[in-house]
Image (tube, rainbow, N blue to C red; front, top):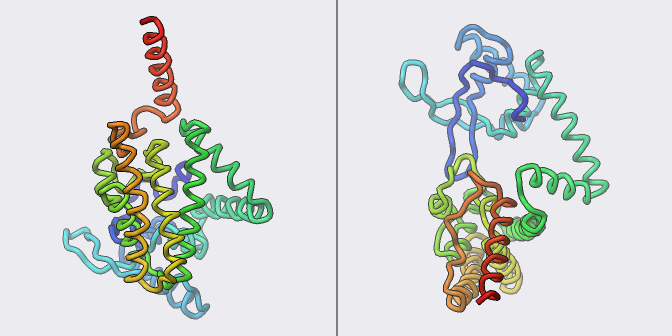
Amino acid sequence: MSNIKLFEDKQVRAIWVESEQKWYWSVVDVCSVLTEQSTQRGASNYWAKLKERLNAEGSQLLTICQQLKMQAADGKFYATDALDTEGILRLVQSIPSKKAEPFKMWLAKVGYERLQEIENPELANARMKEIYRQKGYSDEWIEKRIRGIQVRDELTDEWNKRGIKQQKEYAILTAEISKATFGMTPSAYREYKGLDKTKENLRDHMDDMELIFTMLGEASTTRIARSINAQGLPQNTVAAIKGGKVAGDARRQLELETGQSVATKENYLEEAESQKRKKLKSEKVDLLDKNNDN
């Protein structure tokens, strides 16, 4: 969506919700942009009428709308209707506006591609691989990253079956696995790597070994949750800690044998993963040649 300029120069307030790890956007501000309302009152009135229509239609959009405190023009904070990114995209579809047309066309394209992927799941993997290649990742890294996504999806599906429904609960369990595996929560891990928590995906800045141990912790958690028939947050927390410990014990053993830490401060903000991989291979070849000469 980075090539679609919806908000132009107008200010649209947004707030990062740490517990859900996502942005929420002011609905009134978005309505103001799309409907070209000249005043805040005009945008508020438009949203009020739209809510009445959506309510009459039985739209689920209103059920995911949250009241979050955002700063107004007078500098004070007021409860404001807000939607996450998915909700904003649904809102755009409900507003007849020329400014919304680029988004509607984009959504139609994404929907068509999604139908193709359902019929042929290999297309989804192919598209994902191409996106990562364009970002500068090597095929070796991409294979591990995609496998990690599959392992993660299997785990979250298992959690859903076992009574884990809220985003906050997923975050708690993920943090327990990470702490047991690496000795750090995901937020602490991002800080360790120098990543912006609102922009960078932690796993997109992990190297091969970090991805492998992340997979081991999550795959172990899935198997343990099944073996003990974990239900609800308390029991699944036990499974998450045990699953993470399996990976953590293996990590510590590897570190003992190699004298090297698995968790690294390296990231791919300044230099692409594929470039770093090439440099590492070159350094290993040079070291091997030097040893052979001696």
